[in-house]
Image: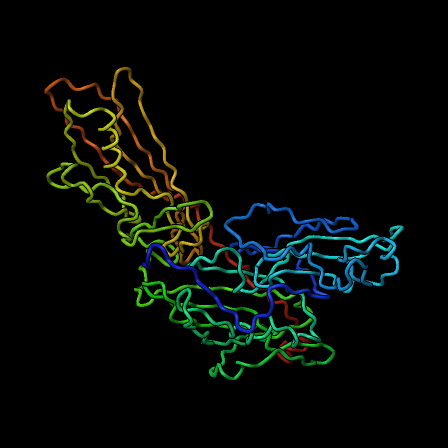
Length: 510
């Protein structure tokens, strides 16, 4: 595993232009998508009818994680305002223009004003004219514009976080070769700093290029340098226009060391042909981090659990984050280990892993004296039963990934107590019930865990007399319950032969 505090990944985009730009004729992106989402979310546009653009409020809307503050207030930025204290023609963002001036405007020369183009989400000031009003009015909209680039600044960049993004892009097939976001050169040009603050750059190396045709067939190019500088092109197939060499999927693989240094950056591309029926186009971007000289983590099944292998379990430090697992796969979900001495204090810390499909029960004895208080004994016994770190989640499959939280089931923890007056409540048993089902094909079913319940059972004990000792037996157990529904085999109906023979087929035998 890497260090506890890793530096942020700094990405340097070469040939970047000024951070503030005014884009004329820019098409607004009206769908947004989070890093962990695959469905577009519509952006709400709230028009404001005003002769003067309002100011951006200081407090932005709630957002998960810190976001760099914009350098420029786009609502106050007007690049076409060239004449001081005078209205410039067709400059809709000019604060000196009034409704009388709008009546002679033909259109807004700068309809969209944006800030830094490197942000994944940034404010955009949209201007238009309402000629149906009397007198004509300026319409101002302040919206969030989305940048689908994999190297955009979403939040403070966090290292070692695998990400996947899908975005929908509207393209003009006749001019697709002019869109740099469709060209593979756009995604192979960025450079990555080896460590923050250093001038050592790690180039992006194209490792694989796969071409997908219109009929979904895939062809891998052996020589990746052939199309390294190629751009999308338009070809005609009859009356249909097709744009070739369009980037459909982009996958980055970054290799890092134990010190948090990026030493290698690989790029895998999927190019394809796009016709008019595929517009709007959906592109997919992924980035993965691989530790140098790291041994592959053994799985407990692929995908379903294999009988006899340990259950995969872990913790979720905060809502929305991935699952954290211990490096010891046999120590993620454990029980007490029985020994010949049966002394709980002698075997403290020695645990037995929970193996899939194996019902187990173990226990030990704990001697209590008058010198120990009830509260202290209860805490010690609970610690002995649960172990050093009892997990919050268990993986549904043997190969569930830590970042796919939906592939993990929570551990439901239940506490049972018996209330008796003037008694000490001590936990004496921990039982774990794992419910699983057969998933997938009838010929090759896969074991999938659907529910995990941990039951902590407490009993009432009277206070010990002075000088006396009491020995208490504590135990842990795990039970696997198959909750699969009865499988029903399905067969296709036999084909019917509906053939007709000529009337003289058997002549002259009939």
